[in-house]
Image (cartoon, rainbow, N blue to C red; front, side, top):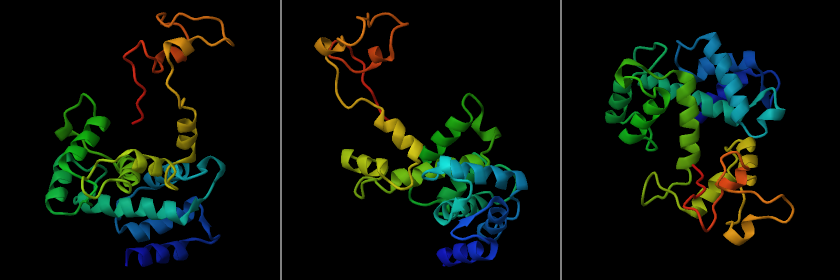
Length: 225
């Protein structure tokens, strides 16, 4: 039923399938989200954010149906969390939504608290909420992570599942390019000094980035989060 609603909103508002422009997106989002408090500025920001997150978004000006579906679905969820329909949803509203089984399985109490810590670092969490743009951003990446999570152990992934996420169609192509630039080998003390470069001292702070990579004589590891 949700998919039929999204398809109806898309068909009602799109004039140039298989993509939708900004004005059509605002119309379709209003129909699909079932939440009447989305301002024009918020819809515009969501459109730009969705374009930047979608695969090959750096080459696109209009939005495809999959990206629209993800945004509209998050907007519907945010509307259920934010019962008073103002600009922000508070931490207590998120916790109430979790207790009422409104939030999907990809959420738990720790994830909700961590999202608020990321958005309001150093601030009193109960006095500030999360807006729709921030919620969609975190919800988008939670969906990417959760599609690879272990069925027997939620919110955890192994190496094979992480690799599947890297090649996911939902992961922005720009992020995939970043991952490809990470060196795939471990540098030892013998291989640290390359013959192609001038010898460098890894103890100096102003030296090359290569000194931060993993090498046998350092207790520094490269982590991907």
